[in-house]
Image 1 (cartoon, rainbow, N blue to C red):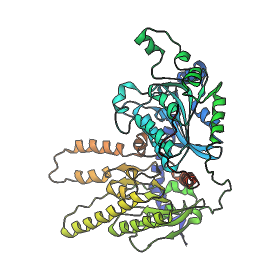
Image 2 (cartoon, rainbow, N blue to C red; image 1 turned 180 degrees about the horizontal axis):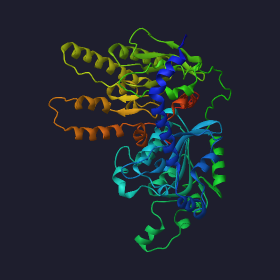
Image 3 (cartoon, one colour; image 1 turned 45 degrees about the horizontal axis):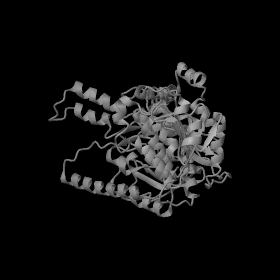
Length: 532
């Protein structure tokens, strides 16, 4: 093992003035946004709790989980979208322990638009299910929804990855023997009624939960018949007549206790309660606040960041002298062995070949891989045959690395610590390459290219370019806004924005969640559990 030894005073003092102010703003903005999207109107809260006599969604989660250690995913999803801000995308998704087993939880928040499903709500739930499938996580649905938002039905209903895919996933997960439980803790109208109808086991709260495709007002309009909620789709009807519900409870508290009882029958392997022994990094993770890259035209020495993430700051570097603009090697995070692939400059021909070699090695040994993504935007133009040949070799090597990553059958975690630009991001396991988890730092930029370097070239007077400077400036502003971490997270292009100083904790939790899958011996069966 090689140790990172550095002159901390020199390194941090040089970086402090350049980055701490900018990152301080990003971190503050992130915390302010997080607080803003979690706020609810007082009238909506009162209607939910006093009029409808229901618990708030986060109180429901607390009753289901073993403790308050809830790993929430994509909290900024739904912020400042073209059709408005949908706080938390109208639902809470995340991972927590139920009776010692890591589980995915998907919970509607009826204080946001009455629990109505917007396009972003569907996308958030589909991503949660995808994470549950990749990591073999039992899933609990807390359903309190009025169904799809009809004015946007063309963005919710017809396509491959729209609302119907949620129900396909429920059946598919059951065929993979991933346990699923649904709690009807409010209205389940229209498509929402399929959650409890397809899940392995379903629970309903008497006089609070209901299930039907169309409610009493529509029945009245269509047939002229007056019918109550309980008669049309209440707990008694579905538990005694339709058979669509397995358990009926008198209170929400009893329902969530029943979830925990059901979880005890999952027959799922549990991670050991014995904590692994590990060393803290030699350098404090708090110092990552001053190390987050702000200038994407050059690359910070990524080893400064690694030394604040890994156990004992110990790193066994692989091919240290070859392709040094990509750092690869083995380390531990809170006792978990990982392979590390980190940008340290341009992804050159040699660096890409090294990356392919190392990813293949990790896949062969079944070692999870952590990618630290900070790609350097391409600014130099190809003006000679030699440059064209070099570019061709580089593209072939990057394609090899992409193929290796796409086919590597090991868990992958991606952390964007700076720029996430163009084809380099594909070779570093960006969103398109389906990592188990993907997070951004607040300073991150996600775009085809860095608009600041791109438009600087144009504004210097590029020939044969007809747009005037004012139009270019407006386009630059638009692209800069669209490449921010918050714009990305609002649209679920990632699993959340995290503060740099929290990265070690988040990575360790992901690795612990991933490890649970290794304890399972489940095999795929021909069909899901078929309800009556």
